[in-house]
Length: 126
Image 1 (cartoon, rainbow, N blue to C red):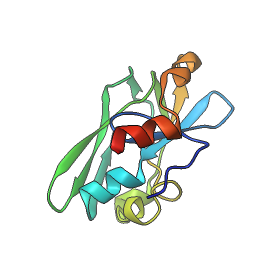
Image 2: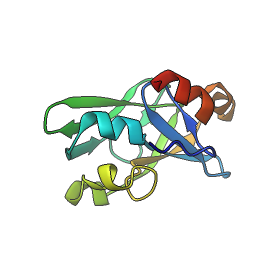
Image 3: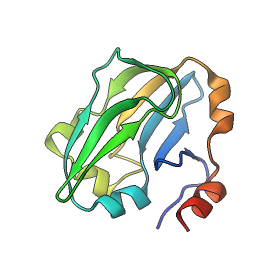
Image 4: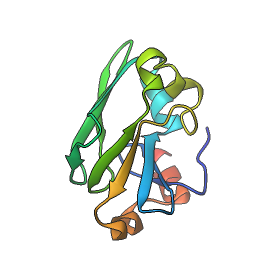
């Protein structure tokens, strides 16, 4: 199982990449996609939607279950991964790359400090 050291994580199995420009890219972890199984549909809130930390910003539907996606930080969705509409399996195939879900403009960059490191996330899923 892959847990990239340069990303941050949540206890709800989202990963967060700081893009260095006041935005972050968000997806679900390799562990999460493995637990869900074959992903058949991803539904995301539209660009311009604003969220507070832990609000639901979408759902992932797998063959056996549906799982909510939780915003790791306060902010506004500035981009959604439209490729997932036609190819939701990208989340299974490349969760940290082509399977990303949304880009969020941060309201409070300090919230990134409260997210889990790769080592801390590894302890959560151990």
